[in-house]
Length: 319
Image (cartoon, rainbow, N blue to C red; front, side):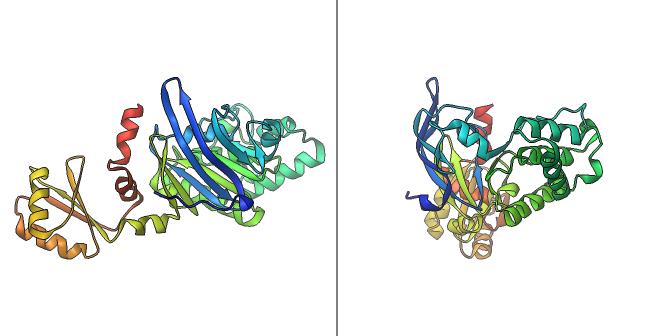
């Protein structure tokens, strides 16, 4: 299918025909997309989908094998130092020193970027105020909650005022309340400081915060767009039907009502504009149905419609 991309002239990130292999295993298969300046953009996919490989390429941690990766107008393969000076990176794995205070962690990170004295102090104060960390300034990091630690991590990556912030699974391990607070801060960062933000995630609720998403599956970019537009592309309501013999039931439903169903994980899925009417008709016509769930389309329904399998299946294969 044809995937929409933004004009390269407006793009903070441009990925063109990128392929990547780990030995004989293909991690990325000709992926292309672009990210606009000032956008919150998400790479959504299960473990093994290719999003972590893309993240490492953009963060200059892996060499570009095939295709082009441009960050803020710089070719990553040719100008790694220039790219690193203009991006902020927050990894999924913790990078804070738990035995140091919040202030000490930020001060040492500032030194790595050549920030000292008044300039460093001013920048640290700005970021601790923005992320609500002022009251924890002299607190040791290993005494902080998971949400506060994550905010310190992001503040660290912003000390040198990057134009692009790369976040790898930013809310993994956080409770729902801490996730909401984190995303409030990220949206303020985009709105107030015009920082472009790109996140990788396997969490559907986290992906909903992004202005646009690229959905990856087994190294391929399967679809891209705003979350609402992607959900609407599924079409109508979604019915998930369980019965003792789903393959046989699918044939009978097609014969009687002319409805196409998709078998996913021993469960029939039907998309229809008038889902409540279909539900009633199915239950009356086929008493062997054990359960029917009616819902509006979700991002997982988008993934299934594009790939033919559930989101978790790739995670199991990757593990």
